[in-house]
Image 1 (cartoon, rainbow, N blue to C red):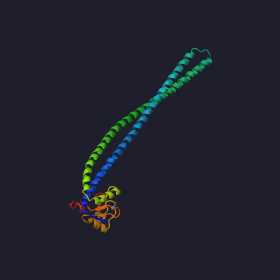
Image 2: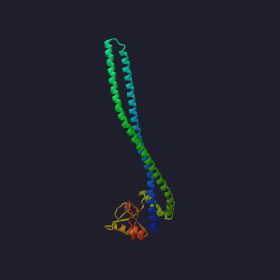
Image 3: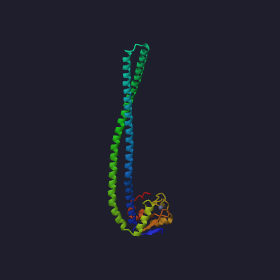
Image 4: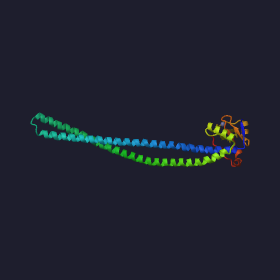
Length: 261
Ligand SMILES: [Zn+2]
């Protein structure tokens, strides 16, 4: 059967339009959890970089503390050896102690230089730590606002769909069951689009299927112009209609064709 005669063309076209709107809304609602998960993941990543910055700062502070302890030890060594200097009589032992003290002082100098470098690094690390903390705080605020907006959208869509479902069910119930079954079958296999408006090329007046975009034969072009009938696309088997035939009242105002999908 390459043409279906029915007085319910307009009603089925309306049902397809309702379903298309509902499908689009469902797709948006389905995308909400995905978007929220992505926002959370991005935030977790930022939080990890915040922890890394904090750890780097703490490690530098530990290093500085260690240097300071070693400086205190060197000081202690210097004092001890100076006390011993007063006690030794032997010249060689005296020289050895002097050399020890010299060593301790050199060691202490190096450690003190190290502490100065560490202080600079700690300053930089603190600045970075603070910057990342602020970034994380801002990001958290933005994220919370975005998630709240997404959740509000999802709730709004859910409420809208709930209301639309009742209307849709009534419209479907009013149709011929055989026609409805055919419609649902094609819809299930053709990505939700069972009834497609024919596209008319304004440059040459040629018709193509609004679902699969294949050009229509002259016979199909004639079929699709018939009142109270659906032509069937030979390529995708969708039910085809012409907007200006189904909606003659819109023909004068040059209604734009259904966007292809
Ligand atoms: Zn087609």
